[in-house]
Amino acid sequence: MPKIPCTIRAIVGRRPFPFVTFFLRTTHISRFVDALVDTGSPYTVLSTNEVMSTRMPITKMRLGEIVSLAGFHFFNHPIKNVEMSFRTETDELFKVKLESIGSLIPTKLNKKTLDEVKNIPSIIGNDFLESQKLALYFNPSKRIAYLEY
Amino acid sequence: MYVIITLHRESEIMDDSQILEILKRVEKDSRWLSENYEEIQSKYEGKIIAIKDSQIICEGSTMDEVLNKLEKKGENISFLLIESIPPKDVSFIL
Image: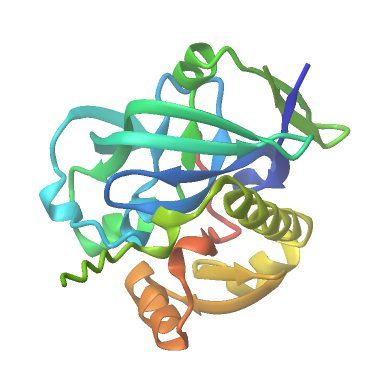
């Protein structure tokens, strides 16, 4: 079955986590994003840092469902009309069009909070894996991870 | 005679082959970061870094600082890997 390669990175706690890189295009932004594949997350979201890197006005994005993550509260602000492109191991593009993708906008927008949440990565959640019929293979001891479709 | 000029951002007019090429480059940078994470974390903990061609081309304490530096260098921010490096003593459960 076709595969989308992931990289393994030992981030917080020095434990290995699978990351996948994709190209994100919306009406207003285009960016290459490195996201943690987290089967424990119900949501696929862009991190606060990722949103800030596009210079989108986060003070005007404090809308949406409130979600808790890593001890912080965020508005899950939807960014509309999204296309995501992933590279497959055979060097083709696996393209996905979504009505929207969430973005993590802290409910408290102060310097201290922004400094603390900057370490929270963008996340590919199980909503995305299910809707795109993707499976995650993750073998941390052998440092192997990929998405399969 | 009318001349119509339409301005597009570079990334909006990228075709699939261009996306694929840059994806490969950014993935390579992501792998390089993963493979050298411990060393990079020792040097840049608490910072935000920008990576291009397996090199750290910019660092700063805030995203704004990093973006301003990159713009001054004339870099296309859309095509770079920009990552936050958490301090070694920070861990959290997502």
